[in-house]
Every structure is written in structure tokens, then in C-alpha cells.
Length: 153
Image 1: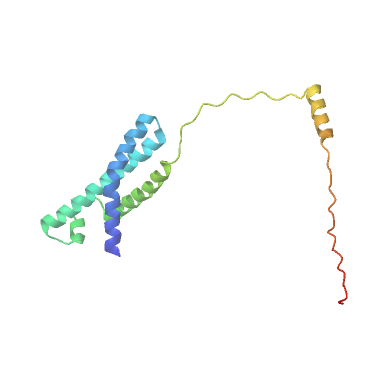
Image 2 (image 1 turned 90 degrees about the vertical axis):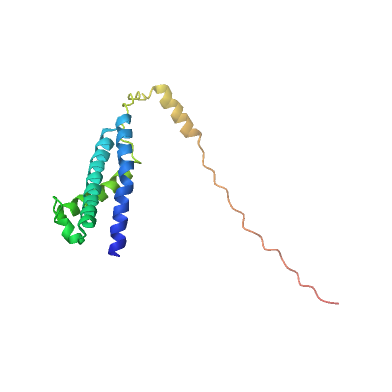
């Protein structure tokens, strides 16, 4: 399971880099500052994470050493890499949700005029209320047909 988890995380990060960069520039062109900053930060984190992971793999393959030994050659502590990667994954989730949210502030609609109740409107409403009548229909009780008993001849 650890292998599967590591591969899916790497694929997620690598596959998301191009999309986040494209969305950063698209949201910048659309004037959505919050989304631009979110995707910009996410792009930087994903690029940094991908570069460090690529560097670790290159050191491991070039020097033919274990993964643990390759981490020694990276200038960032492993714990910091884990935190950066975790933050990038969380921001990916937030960014995905933000794609469906519009942050544009619309110009405020002018306030509608208040309705003033004039005596004519009040009288019209009163007459409409008086015209409403409630009628109740009385239900008929079903009649049971009489049965006659006949004698056989």
C-alpha cells in the first residue's frame, strides 16, 4: 500500500502542475485575484515538490544509493518536504473546489423603492379580502341499497 500511495501522490503532483499554471494565468486574465494567488501559490509548491522529488530520484540513480541515503544530498529536510507536499495536496483540494465558486463582486443593485400604502390600495385590499368566501361542502353519506329477500316458489 505504501508503494501505491507514493505513486498516486507523485502522479497527482506531476499531473497537476501544468493545469495549475494554466489556471493561474487564466484567472489573472479574468481579474480574479483570490484564485490567481491560490493557484499561483499552488503552482510554486507543486513545482518545488516535483523538482525536489526529481532531484532525489536523480541522486539515487546516479550514485546508485538507497532512497534514505539520497535524502542526505537534498538541501531541504525530509520533514519540511512532507509538510510542503501535504500542504500542496490540501491546496489542490481547495483549488478544485474554488473552480466552482465565483468570487466576482457584482455591482450593488440600486435599492428598490418602498411601496407606500395609499388609501386607495388599502381599500382595494380590504375589498379583495371581503370577497373571499369560504364554502364548505357537505359530504353525502353513501346509502346502502336495501336488499330484499324473496321466497322461492
